[in-house]
Amino acid sequence: MSMRWYVARRVAWAVLATYLILSITFGLLAVSPGNGQTAFAFSAATSGGDVEEAQETFKKITGRDKPVLERYQDYMVNMATLNWGWSFTRNQPVMDAIAEAYPYSLMYFLPATVISLILGYGIGLYSATHQYTKTDYFGTFVAFFGISIPNFWFGIMLILIFGVTLGWLPTFFQTQAILDHGVFSVANAKQLVMPVVVLSTAAMAANMRYSRAEALEYVHAEFVKTARAKGASDWRVLLRHIFRPALVPLMTILIGDILAVLFAGAYITEVVFQIPGLGQLSYKAIIQQDTPLVLATTLIPVFLVIIGNLLQDIAYTVLDPRIDYEGR
View 1 (tube, one colour):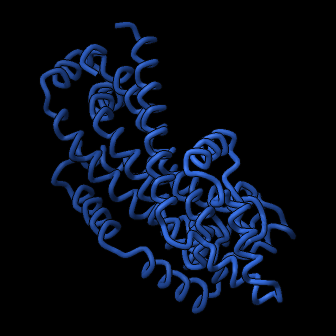
View 2 (view 1 turned 180 degrees about the vertical axis):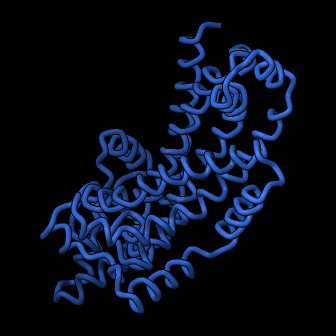
């Protein structure tokens, strides 16, 4: 089987998985009671509108007055064309709400991911090649600290120490700082320091522990000893003969960690530091029962999982030539 046919098969599976997820999501929405109708009617009543008229308007907007099959067809077409509905709590299309929120999430998510990958894998490899030394024990202590400490508690402690007591950093995120000074400014960087530290700590600790465990399997391998005997430099041995084979199983962990950061870390970090990103957007949508917005903010990580698994399968074959296309 050629590489092109292998990739085509994986893409076809990704499309099928996406179709099944969207169909299941539609079924759950179809049988869920209310589906935001009550909140929509309450919003109309508080603003002086007619409740029954608001309920009828809601059915027309969401298409709930149509047969199920027709609603299913409209739903699939809308999902494919990125028409993901209307957020009645924000009074704007769902895609517009997501477009406004995701830049704030990226501001701290990307630096935290890069830091956790570089430091996590770097410390893990160093600990594996310097096993049972003081630096190995210190790295292990840092890893257990990062895994064990709750993000919300760590964030609150940082706010109390560096924001309230010392006054070095802002205690919460302020969008006005971006409007006044820009995204790439010292003021914005200062208010992103604590969210980046909180978000990267747990992911860095997990990356370090996994990379250390995987690298230890190859540190004393025969092909590594052969490479050293032939005069290969320490960096070549570390990167080419230890890190490369260890990277294959780490690919699965990498995607899992990113999703963990996206799901749990974003919710907690954005609520603690008042960052108006995707996590806080989804949190408020759940509290206010804004179903279209909850659905959209939930489906985005699902799509990332599908794309991530597709890239992961392709990366397997690139990193490890021993993997056969036929068996996958």
